[in-house]
Length: 89
Image 1 (tube, rainbow, N blue to C red):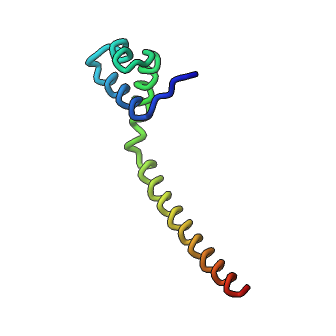
Image 2: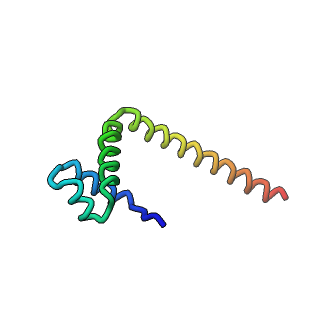
């Protein structure tokens, strides 16, 4: 059975690897993970960090809010219709 690591641990290990204060092998030993995983997580942090500041991320949050508002509106409308149908039957 494979061992699964949480997101917080992955981020912590990757950030520590980015600091270059210890070698990859030392970090792997400290957190009891394979050194290939440490390198993989470090690479992911480096590749994905630029996307954190892109305008697409900010716009995606706003469109998500619009979708949530629309869904709440639809839920309210369906609730009103359901209550009206219950009274008529």
